[in-house]
Length: 265
Image: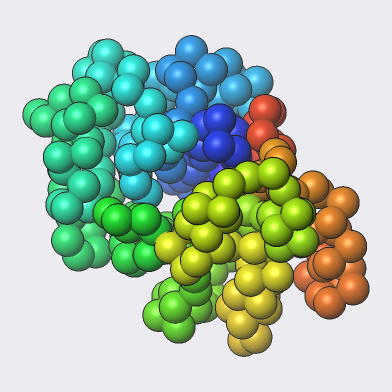
């Protein structure tokens, strides 16, 4: 199992999960994009730099359809490479508005299988009007919890992500920087009001709750605000309040891909 963040910011979000069978004769690899908020060209380049090929992509799982998670230029690669677009049923009109071909789109309302051995459990998240989807992905090589753009953490998400091997979760803003920024009041209220994004402190509290029984092998922090956050603030916070987890953390930077998990590393 390999997982990489290709880009993560308000300018564009995309990650990739690749699962390869231990015995190639017993199945084929699945390469899953989690969101497609980068252009196909940028996605191809960042995949290639990390040892992936865009042509191997079998599925795209969308968390939601804000522009930074769903670019409107993916119809051609989806059809060219035979990718399956997967989204919540309530998001179907938004997928169509992004130009995604309906004949390659499958909607879900419950857990579903990718192939015969990858189980995907969607979890509803509060985000703006249409909400977002988190995913727990169970594979023969391990489990992944992926959540971004959630206004607050519900107990159901903590329960859903307990025991995952890899946890990818947004850590969007530093509260002090947000409050003191020049952003308009309505935007601050949207981000901090329970339907926007998680602060660094909220993310840390969530991860510690998930890790109570068993800590994830890797923790990827996503979607850092360019204006209202900085990796040094996250590092100081974790080293002070969760030093035992800090060595497991990878901070995704906005404009470059990073390989978070390769096998059991």
